Structures are given as C-alpha cells and as structure tokens.
Length: 285
Ligand code: PDD
Image 1 (cartoon, protein in one colour):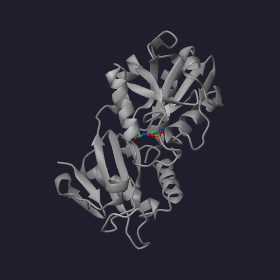
Image 2 (image 1 turned 90 degrees about the vertical axis):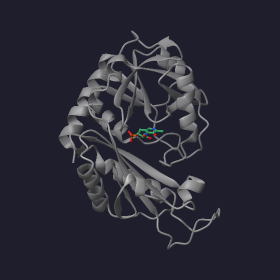
Image 3 (image 1 turned 45 degrees about the vertical axis):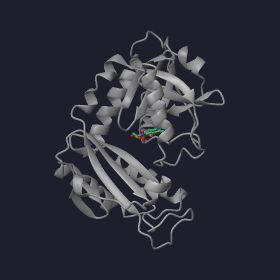
Image 4 (image 1 turned 180 degrees about the vertical axis):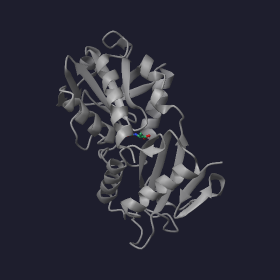
C-alpha cells in the first residue's frame, strides 16, 4: 500500500484524511504541482518549487514550508514507496476553517498539505512517443488566471472526456480563434526550423517543461517564436507536439481529423524529447 503525506505525517493511503470543511474540497481553493521522477530522482524540482510559491503568492495563501523541507518530503515519499519512475503530486489548500464561508478564513488557519506518489515504470519509454497523439480542438471555457496552477480542473477534465468520445487522445483549447494550451500540457507547432508556442500571460500555465524545452531548442540552434497560432496553422505545420511534466515531449500527429505533416512523429519532436529526457536525467535531484 502507498504511503502518503498529509499535514506533517506519513500514513498508509487508507488512513490519510482531510476535513469535509477543507477549502480545497468545498471551493477548489488550492494549488498543486506535479513533479516527475526518473531513476528515483526529481526532475526540475526547483522550477516546480518556484511556481508553487508564485501560485500561493498570487492567491495570498501561506507557504506551508521551506523549499528544502518540501524537497525532503518528496524524497522521503520516493524512498518509502520505492519509486523509480513516476510522479509526485503535491497539493496545498487554504485549509479547514471549520465551516463553509466565502470569505477567506483567519490568518492563523493552517494550510492543508498533501503529497502522494504515482508509480509509472518505464515512463520515459511511453509507446505514445512512437505513434504520436490525436487531438481535437475545443473552446477554452476556463477562468482568466490559468497561470495560477489551481485545482479547478473540471473543464480540463471535461475536455479529456470530449477527446475520448471523439476517439482522440487529448484536446487543445481555443480562445478568440487561437490555441491557448492542451487540457494538461502546453501546445507547439513546428514549421521548418522554427518552433512556435503561445507567449506567456494569464491565458496559459507557465509550464516548467516548456521553459526547459525552449532553452534546449535555442541551444540546439532552433528558432523559437513565442506567439499564438490557430488550429488551421497547426494543421498545415510540419509537426506538432505537447509538453508537460508527465508526458515530457509528446508528438501530435492529427488535429481535428487532419494529419499533421506526414501523420507520424516528426524529427524535431523526437529530438527535443531525447534531449529533454537526457538533460533532465543528468540534472535530476
Ligand atoms: N499539468 N498546461 C496545463 C493546463 C497543465 O495542467 C500543465 C501540467 C501544463 C504543463 O506544465 P508542466 O510542464 O509544468 O508540467 C500546461 C500537470 C502535469 C497535471 O495536471 O497533471
């Protein structure tokens, strides 16, 4: 049985509990991070810790503990659950005020902190990296602060189900005619030697994998354009792909029933995936 972490204690998953009055449960008043693990080590822990701090600050939530303490909890869960490859999920909510109220609870209310592991042996060798993903486009109906990594995931969850119902693997969301991002990943197209991905702002999550992949792309002399693009432009691109902590770099081969490029994973996505996984393994903590 998994050992999970809740508010300072390591417990069997069946014994870990959170109050029914928790703001995360009643109001989606919480933020989260997903950090991947390869060979028992954390990928880009610093990036995730910095983004967690930013999400908490933007919502005026207290930071539960120092970065070093959080790192130690991550490592302890990897040890206790003998994780080789997989993910660590971390969630911080505004805690349990003891009742339901729209107003934020008093300052002294302790945040709720939960972490658990997800084991995914062989995560870096996902078969989907060979076949590529099919995606559909859907309207982006989320709120206006998608740069804050909140646990309000109902619409992305519905988006995944819409994709599933259409026989696809995921959905890209579109606002004012332009792609924002995938349901749980950032979206890219490739034209020649140029990689295009939406610019940062309140409209998308500032992906930690995105930052690393764009850095590696520039180091490999590829051109990067941070601007929005349409579904039509994506369908006419040479390649498309997504990035996230859980998928690394994953090729997209079909958008709304139209093949992208040759309809098979392209060389740029393949190369960036290799570089990302190699470099991340080297820098893992
Ligand atoms: N999702 N955009 C959205 C909406 C996301 O939910 C995510 C991550 C990303 C990619 O961010 P990063 O590279 O930092 O993982 C972009 C995580 C993996 C999840 O919800 O499981």
